[in-house]
Structures are given as C-alpha cells and as structure tokens.
Length: 97
Image (tube, rainbow, N blue to C red; front, side, top):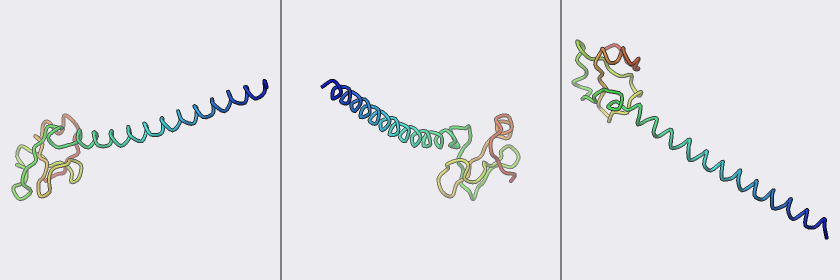
C-alpha cells in the first residue's frame, strides 16, 4: 500500500510539471509574437519622429533625410522623412538622397 501512494504522488508531480512547462511555452510564444508587433510599431516613422511623405514628392534635401527603405513602416508609395539634426542625434537608419 505504501508504495502505491508514493507512486501516485510522483505521477501527480510529473503531470503538474508537464502542465507548467506547457503553460510556459505558450506564454513564451505569445510574448515573442506580441513584442515583435510592438517593435515594428515602435520603429514606425512617426513614432521615431519622422513624417511619411508622398514618394513622388520625397524629402526636402536641404532639411531632411529619408529613412532607409523598409526600416520604417510608412504606407505604400510613401517615404519616411526625418529632420537632419534629429536623424543624426538619434542615429536613425537613413539613406542619402
């Protein structure tokens, strides 16, 4: 009889441990996918101090620099323009235009 109770306790501990690991894995997956979305929003043009402008118009070369293609999430056919001083002070990803 005594061995059976010890075995039941061991099995319940194993089941609880497996369930805890499953919960941790699910939480890790949720956390990593959500932080990826937040990271893209944080890296957005407006969030980093830029403006999305019509690509045909482009950035003003005297006062602005263009954000690197694909680095900031402006809508299609637009570019992200930053003030030159802001871009260099923040070390933003830019291209020479």
